Image (cartoon, rainbow, N blue to C red; front, side, top):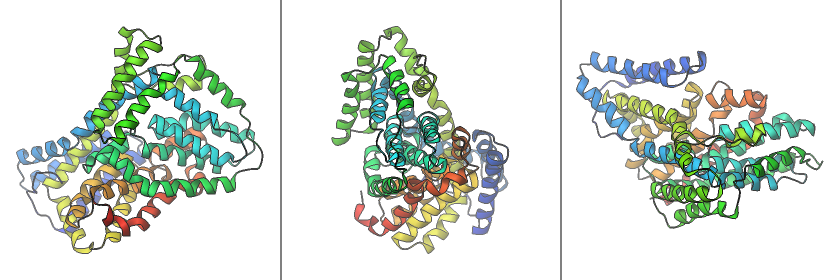
Length: 456
């Protein structure tokens, strides 16, 4: 919880009504008008300042609340900057291209939907972005499915499931870093702990996709074009695996995420400077603006053109605004009043986890924004978990299980609108087959009874 104490004690009804008003405002702008989330969050922030002034809270106290909220996300912000550099460095070292190429090499056989799910998951982990994975590899798989006369609904469900598995489990993912930072859990401990619910969801989903797969063998003509394009980058060497191995070893030895990512990035830059053919004078610009691929094959160029500090500024500015808004909700007493009612009613572990999952899911439905579902729910329930003896790792895991992976299932959400557009499959059409996304919140609630055994 933020260090600033509430300066006003509103009633529960007043708190709920004001909270719903601000959520409704944000929802209208994001869902109804299709604006970027920054504008409505800033408007909600200004509305909360006005509310605080009307309740005779000094502007100095309100400002302190905003600063305390934003300050709680500084660790994530520094990590986001490093992730932008890591992605660029892994591009020029060939680490991301060789991971994608390896994923393509696994495609074949008759389990088409299961293979699409698994390969998309591998590439999603390597990219750390569900939307990038969907817009590139996902589009290729949709084309293959169409050529095979496969079900577009099941193919899209497999793509979305794999992409959001990657978004959830990748150390490069902004939502994964955000969840761990908001509730103050080490990044790699968070990823490891998520395996308790993510691995069962993955296995069950893979089996379901395998059962539903057509009997015809997969044609790999389109994938050959992708593999040829990746080879044309001239980035893939045996040394391309080294930055990934370094990050893996750092995870095993529990080196802090900031140090691990920085170390892997430095090694990737050195290797990229030696093997990629990119001039040393150009590397520093790539670390800021991202890598630009020029293979001549558009889909591969789009897939590999990413990274850099500049690519993270959208997320960073959103995090600052959202956490500043969260700080105001604390200093005005809105969240503390709601928390007090929760703490009176939530006494057992399963009820607490179920309420956390329902809140994260509800924010996704009401606002359609992935980041806010993680941040608002995390800040709201952090003290509840502390007071009941539940580990923050359980909270972080629940935020991902019911927050991150639910966004693509909401037709008016940021992810839902984007995915439906690029895949050409409506959200409600692929929703019943996005097995991984549907199973994750269910498993996290069912697993809740064992949560107390995982303190840390």
